[in-house]
Each structure stands twice: as C-alpha cells, then as structure tokens.
Amino acid sequence: MSGRPEEERPWVGGMYDYYLGGTANTAADRAAAEQIMTSMPEVRLTAWANRGFLQRAVKRMIEEWGIRQFIDLGAGLPTQRHVHEVAAESIPDCRVVYVDNDPRIVERGMVLLADTPHTTVIEADIRDYQAILSSPAVTKLIDFREPVGLLAIAVIQWIPNEDNPWGLISKYVDGLASGSYLAMTIPTGDYQADKVKSAIRQVYGTKTTRGVSRTHEEATRFFDGLEIVPPFQGAGPVVTYVGMWGAEDPEEADDDPARWVRAAVARKP
Ligand SMILES: C[S@@+](CC[C@H](N)C(=O)[O-])C[C@H]1O[C@@H](n2cnc3c(N)ncnc32)[C@H](O)[C@@H]1O
Image (cartoon, rainbow, N blue to C red; front, side, top):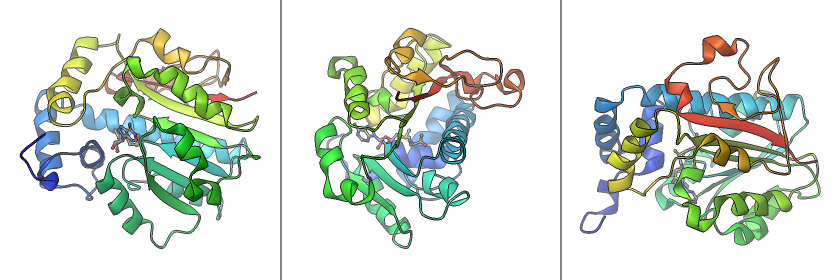
C-alpha cells in the first residue's frame, strides 16, 4: 500500500505468527489479524491445523523416509515449532533452507537462526525457481544428489493461475532426486468457498497481496506424476484436509477450521 511506512503495513508472515500465538509480529500484523478474527475466529485453529500438518509431515519424512534436508518455500517466520525445530527432535544435523520474499521475515529469521547450524533463510520470490535452486546459500546446504523434502505450505495461494503454479511446482520437483518428497497445503476453493474467499479478500486482498483458493481437482494436480502417500490408515492415495493427514483418528480430526486447507505429501518416483 502506498503512503504508509513499511513497518505499519501488516505482513502475511507476521499475521500468521500472531495466529499461531507467536511474538515475532508487529502492531499492524496484530490489528489486521484481529480484524479478520472478528468475522472468523476459527482462523487461529486453521493456522494451527496447517502448522500441525507441516510438523507431522516433516517428522514422517525424517523418521520413516530418511529425509535429511529440506527446502521450505514461503516459510514465514522460523518460530512456533517450525521445520528446524521439529527436525532437531529426531536428528542433530538436518539441513533446512527457508525461502521467503518478505525482507522483514528474512531479516527477523536470520536473527532468530543466528545460532542454529545447518539452517538458513533466503529472500526470494518462489517464482524464481532457477535462481533459488542455484543460489550458493542453497547449494551450500542442499545436496541435490540426495532426496530433499520440498515444502510449499500455505504459500501457493499467492501464486495466481496465470503464473502457472502447477508448472512452477513441477520445475522444483524436476530438480530433485528420486525419493524426494513434496508436501503442500492449498486453501480450498470449494469447501466454505464464500467464507474462505471473503477472508482472503477482506484482509489479504486489500492490505497485503491477493490470494487464490483452489478446488480439490486443482489441488490434486500439484501432485501429477508423483506417488501420493495415503494420508491416514485405510485411505487411498488422495489429497485430504490438513487436520486429517496423519491423524490417528481422522473422523475426530475432521473439523471445520481444518477443512479450509487441503494437504498431501507425495514421493518422487
Ligand atoms: C501464510 S504464511 C505460511 C508460513 C509457513 N509456510 C507455514 O505454513 O507455517 C505464507 C508465507 O509465504 C510468503 N510468501 C508469499 N508469497 C511469496 C512468494 N511469491 N515467494 C516467497 N514467499 C512468499 C509470505 O511472506 C509468508 O511469510
């Protein structure tokens, strides 16, 4: 928005940190987040359902599938039990590259990660996949001959259809070794579609960037050519809702806030 200093503008990552109960946000983030929560208090539960999926997916990638390095696209702030913290619970030397296009996230992230080895945060627009994959900060930590955990969690809504987000994700996957995994979450365009769209429009469309929600079919297309992992016992290889992925009791985990975002993890053959 023109005419207002940077620090007075809410940032998506700062609002998200506030939804998660973090403290690395600004007064503008809190005000914008509170505004959205007056009409949709469940957004906090949605944010946690999304973060919970990320945590379960990362843990499984490490403990069951041997992943030792992650690239996290649209990472947000490295707070509230983010990838490097989940990884550290299982192995000591997991390598993590956080990517975000918001300079304030990157600046804050670098401070927060200053004493964390094998972890970095780089400033880039995820559309610049060639620059990201060849960046010295990335190649220093990531060995592309080995499988990678590629995360695109609650970020693809910022890439409009005209920028071909499906082609973009497949460019990243093309650069990864066989046995790599892709984990994505995608805001829904067909469950409570009006509510989700109005939320995105209400704050994100006016004060930050315009976001796009997507249907089940559109979400599933991100995993074309990959082997989708069944999200819970008894399920087929399908995209599901964030709360249900990895849930011991999927029926119990299937609530409204967790149905605002779809998720899947898939293996590159
Ligand atoms: C809702 S937060 C999600 C944070 C984290 N991935 C999670 O799910 O816990 C989305 C993040 O994506 C970043 N972002 C939005 N568009 C982006 C783009 N084109 N390239 C890189 N980062 C982007 C925002 O700055 C924000 O920090």
